[in-house]
Amino acid sequence: MANVERDKRSLSKQSIPCQGIIILILRLGLSGLFIYASLSKIRNPLRFKNIVANYEVLPYWMVNITAAVLPWLEFWTGVLLLMGILVRACIVMQGSLLVLFILVTGLNIARGMEFYCGCFAEDTIASGISYWHIMFNVLWLLMAVALFILERRRVSHRFLFSPNPAR
Amino acid sequence: MWRRFFFDLMIIICMGIFSGIIVNELRADGIPLLPAYMDSSFHREMDLNAFKREKCKNSCCLIFDARPHEFYEKDHLMGAVNFPPVQFGFFHGLYLADVPPDTPIFVYGRTISRACDRELAYFLALKGHKNVTVIF
Image (cartoon, rainbow over the protein chains, first blue to last red):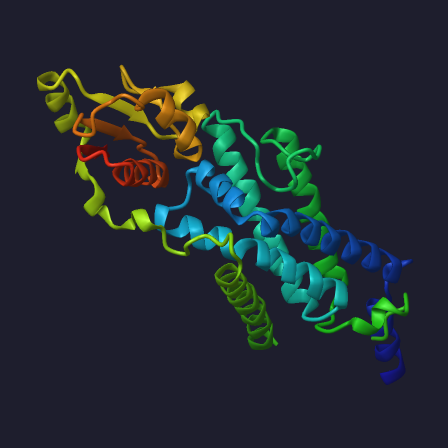
């Protein structure tokens, strides 16, 4: 009886095919996206401050603090996720940031405003406020949700060197 | 488990806040964490109804809409010209090069944020304009 129970448990724990590879791809994708997005904002804080002010959603006293801190939050979640440290917390933080970006973008589309979103460097295809931009963020949010479901570990740095995660 | 998870979240948030503040303070092109225009002693404030009455009495005033161009294009006060503080140097030369410093200037930028109007009023005060009023 105990053996049957153990088998049932192991079956339910059995990973989906190529789970390790999927987790690796999602982690690399999300961390790459956030590190890349943070760098252009960190490089030019004044420009990013003007972009945050352009959104017209934050009270004026929060604009500068947000412009100084937000890129570093993106940067650290990207770096920690890449290194496999505090993985689930990083995924939740990235998911929260993506939800925030979707809401803010949606609000400005609803107000009929279309301007440079500031997510990436100015000449990239993902820049600009549009429904396509929201879809792009929703896609990344779905990837974060998938990674949160698949990745159950808090620290998974070993995974960087071995595609089969040690459970 | 949840306690540990929230602890992890706190670690990430603290890392972001501390590195953001420290790097911003160290770099030469850092931005002030609290904007200088928080101090409202640089300008007067007036609500929209009071402004309409004032405008009737004072026809030689200038009205600037400090919001981004997209907001201005959508709707703006009659007689207002767009003057986003991001391009202050350009627009100051365009609109205010020959204007005496005591000319009444009304700055409009009524949004949730109110960052643009206060910033523009602050920049105008720094340029020596003594009669700047923010309409809210």
